[in-house]
Length: 398
Image (cartoon, rainbow, N blue to C red):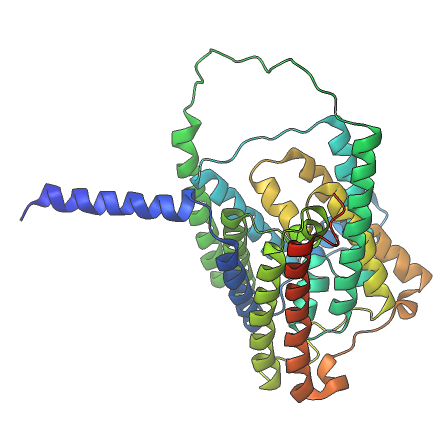
């Protein structure tokens, strides 16, 4: 037996698979399927997937340290959404390292201002809607919360308004063109980061898996599972460049319907799986149904939609873009977390939550028999409308 030839073949096959998984971009439709499956696994494991609760937890701690919040928040490494957010960030960072795509990416000064403003808008909108683009829209629709549809409409309107603003900004303040090119450094780097990054990425993945076992050893297996599922979602999102913002921005900007089709398909998978879980009483029917229908979800969606256009990222993509080195989104995350925490406390103090609406479980209104076909028809109509717009460009404003 030719041992050298055998191990050479194994090494070559491993290299090809590494390139296919960690260096080549994944198709967005495949990512949509994976995200739906992972969201269902999280739902079965403990609770529906969410993002903003983790952000709020971080903001609550900031105000607690300042003495502005007298109640001690739940520690971040025990808070379920905080842990899954850590996982999402870690998965994206590991993916960026394994693909040698991590780089500290700076932006013009005005973009940092827009990043902060976008975070403020998104934090406020998420407070009104009871969730961000994930918890208030994707998960809400998937677990049959009526507020998800109101936020969906609000996100579309907010994206339109935000894009209108960006177009106005480009017309009034066009970017300055310069002939100056960045100076190239001929000094050889001390470290060959192209060779080091994959090892760092592999170490992050190993640490996340070790974290799961550590949580399990501490008797907190469910928390460890959320860390692991978040890690996989971050990996999928980065490898495919999956971004919910594109589903609401691109139809108005370029007419591209790809992300609308992908999100609609992903939601169909998620919703049908959720129907099995809830209809069969594997999880309580009212789990995840708390989004204020209709006013809170709608106005929150509009505000959030404007913010995600300004920031260039949403609740989930902010995390994975930070994972690949975007410094602008770091400020967005900070502004998002602090704003959501403060606005939620203000709303509780003023007592306006009841005026925004309440969570409504769709099957309680239409019955399960009608809910499923209506659910599929709404998403099919959204996808077909986007495809029609892609061909006719009736709604394109760019």
